[in-house]
Image (cartoon, rainbow, N blue to C red):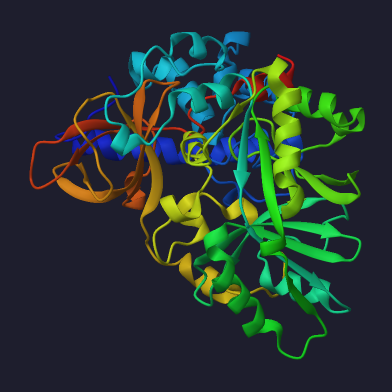
Length: 470
């Protein structure tokens, strides 16, 4: 089993020291090997290496494998592909191969893909009220393809002569280098450097389009108007006039290309195109928060049902399923992609939830920059993923304990059908926000259950495995 340090404080200190040192070295080696234009402290330990996050490809995977073998004297086999998930998972692998720690059988069984997993999913979790996981929706999106509708999401256009300078100030990411036809996944901060909004930004010929959760619409509009000042920009609320249809799953790319046009095969992660359909313009962009192929169509509201019906009809040969959008929260948590409402806590900064990769620290000014820099000097709880196979109910707000004391709390809970485990998104004392520690999750002074911290993403999806061609 994973290491339990409840009564072994000296071992705990040694493990944390070794883990921290090796993590920094791995980040340095990744930057050197792949010649990335990044500094070590800007690569989060659970930032996905492929897809979203660093966006590496199969060539990079080969380079990383060679680096690990050469610099750490550890053999990398094809069957070890699951370790290419994040910096943390690479550290897990090296430590296990060195036999410096015993991460146990459970850690060695991290699945390589969800191909075989689908065959093992035999029953629903017992507590539907807690998990809110639909068995068939999950199977569709992890093994085949699912369709989700987002009615009236937050869609706000920014146009005018000062559009770029305005958006560049509002968004913490690199807006200036964003080409037309591309998407940026980033954050908008408040004055103190905390996350106000997690957004997608599309750069169009006429300006920019902000895409965010439906419930953030009014607050985001208020934010934009508060900082508009005398700039010559127009803020256009397009939310009520459009919906979003999302096609998600390992077969999503194949299906989208078949239904629409072959050119979409070349649509990369973070890119979008504008299609003419029934006399209207539809924006189709490629996302990646679930680890699967994820194509999202921004559709005029009057055509949404017509397009959805056509997609469902043409998608029948792919076993397309119409899914509830709530399932995306579970898929995102398995990847440690942040769903703002269910996973963040008030005042949360990017570094607490491994979102520093969304920040362009080279920018001289952006909303919340000074507050963000000051936040680095303060000790704050950090987010980790815990898993447990206990049947005892675990709830939001339950206490997380280690070494005989409370060191955090559970923020969100779901059930991973792929892993047959509960997945807990928790905030803990940053000193203990490392994988392979055995915590206790308890409530009302009860004994509680064992919950093990894990590297994220929790597994490589079928989509990522196939895209790596390994």
